[in-house]
Length: 73
Ligand SMILES: [Zn+2]
Image (cartoon, rainbow, N blue to C red):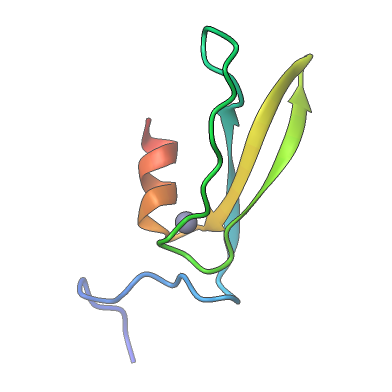
């Protein structure tokens, strides 16, 4: 079976995952809420420290529509 444009994205538990780093706080220092992704099954988040800044690292299925939107920003 070959891929077609109508193929559904692979967002199952065993889908390959990728990460995106997001700001943990807004300009006023208020923490952003972390909400589970409704578009993919393997989503999870972790706290990361990068160059002294605290970040939220979200992991999504690489084909997750929300992930693709996040990395496009
Ligand atoms: Zn997702």
